[in-house]
Image 1 (cartoon, rainbow, N blue to C red):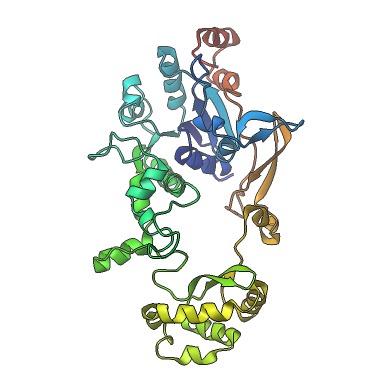
Image 2 (tube, one colour; image 1 turned 45 degrees about the vertical axis):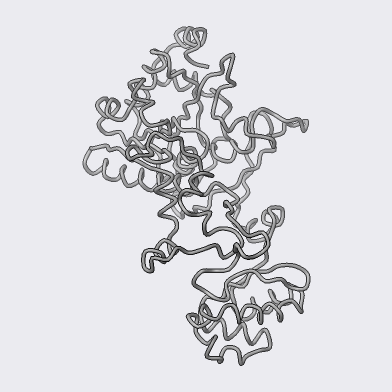
Length: 410
């Protein structure tokens, strides 16, 4: 596998960090997930283990302790439960870091320094280490000590100002995206940064520190809308399901439901007008080019909507597919996972799990010809691999049992 032989020590939890480490694990890295042992006042482990329902169901159909949220971001990892607040727990983290290629963490700024596990300390121990921190706002700046959550960052970073129906229409107002995109994008950017740092390390022998922030990522992923503002000084507003720069590029109501029309150029618009039985619209000076269609969207879109409302959506989708005009249906997740293309691309992965043989996970989108993704390990139970990992470090069964009795591990 592409990352076979790379060891990742993962001290992250919730989503951004685990999404990064799952991606690395899918590519072959040995990811050791460090989790908090259970205590009298805390169930232990990654917070998302308890973020349910829904939970994984066992063979009898009863809920287990493993939330679907946790399962979606933690396959192909091994779990070790260590109390890093204890001196012996800190010593074990140092042992693991000394043999790791990558350390990934999302503690608040300064927290790991209290345990002697910050980047300077661990890079002094292992100069080849790639140390990646994921926080809400980065390691410096006026917000660096704030806790960062995806929802708040979607608002602060501008995404909610351009997501949702237009303010003047029913249902208008700010709207978050349905999944935690700031977390997910940060996890993917962290993956890219780690791979770049590993290439540099392999060429020079030198590790480095990566500082990833949700807010930075959210600002970067504004993409063309950020560029629109920087070019004009005018902040884009919410457009609902319409596009800021392309017309027609939005949803329309057909006779029996909604569909998407995604006309990307003038040639496609001319074909779409033919489908609608109005070829003259493509020659109208107000609509002949995309720039003119954007300027006259308030005239054109109602004209299109009236025509589209007169036929069922499959009528339009069939005609659009035949004419190579981009568009599509709007599926719920049951329809998504039943879609023939999704099934063909193996985007649902069955895996055996210690609690059931019926676990299904969303597959990886990465399709590599020579080093394909492999689904080796199901999302681990809390501390499932503690003994194995400590034995690899050379610790005997008696010592491991003593540490477990002392609460250092679980």
